[in-house]
Amino acid sequence: MPEDTHLAQLATAFEGIPHCRELGLKIISLEPRRAMMRLEYDDRLIGNPATGVIHGGVISAVIDTVAGLAASASVPVKSAVATLDLRIDYLRPALPGEAVIGEAECYRLTHSVAFVRALAHQGDRNKPVAHCVAAFMLNSTGFSVADSGKA
Amino acid sequence: MLDNIRKLKEAGDFAAINQLIPYAGVIGLEAVVEDDTIITILRKRDENIGNYVIGAIHGGVVAALLEHAAFLHLLYAMDISTIPRIINLSVDYLRPCLNRDTFARATLVKQGRRIANVRVEVWQDDPARPSAAAHAHFLLT
Image 1 (cartoon, helix red, strand yellow):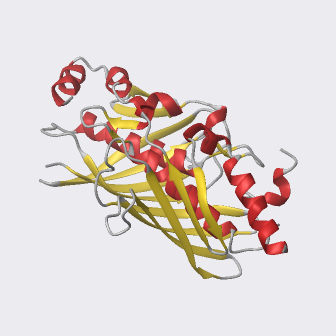
Image 2: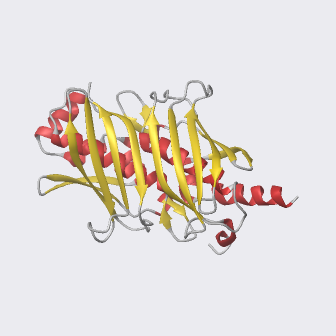
Image 3: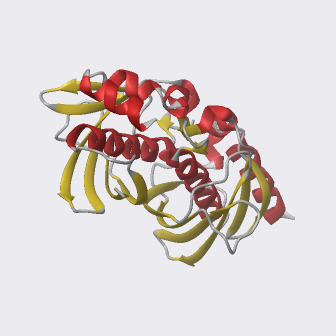
């Protein structure tokens, strides 16, 4: 099953990204064009000490990673993927003490660009914390599994 | 929190305001006042790498730098009655950010009664060659 091997390689590569290890960002599910990740709450991630709400930058990191993972899961294993742009709407504050789940889907794939939408929520996807649309450049000098063995 | 920020702002101590925020320390964000503007610095840190193939900083960390720079600039540039809350952020990634000290500077495009619009640019060697740019809206009420 070459497709599964591809996804397994992707999962290992993404969970091995230094910043994902730093945050403790884990993959929950991965299939062609779709990905889901989970980040546990941690006091270190707080952006507003008065409320305990995590920093918007943490949500950005979850969303950029899960969206990049969905983009990578849409193309052959050798393709490199680089974020072109990312727009995030912060819909409600993340509840302190609760994990954040990121979900992403590549909804349009062209020769050069993967268009991805993503959501961050805390267990109920009807109450999203953030919504995002992103575009990824394919076959540029981005992140690819093919090269990651050299690192 | 707000009173604390106001006191530190009066003393011109933006480094201390920055230190109130735990996440800023995790990724290595610092703030300095220079030529009547705030420069937000993201220190070189191996844990911030998102692409170990080319050794580039994680796109989410770059977004965090942009958002943080916009936030600190609002505290600096405005008389605040509440802590500004981010509504949305749109990031363009222009060049890879390699693993070294990275800088950001924001400008307040428009301050309305309830909303502020801010633009931010990130660079590494030369401010004229930005690595990333963003615009963001913040709620002021």
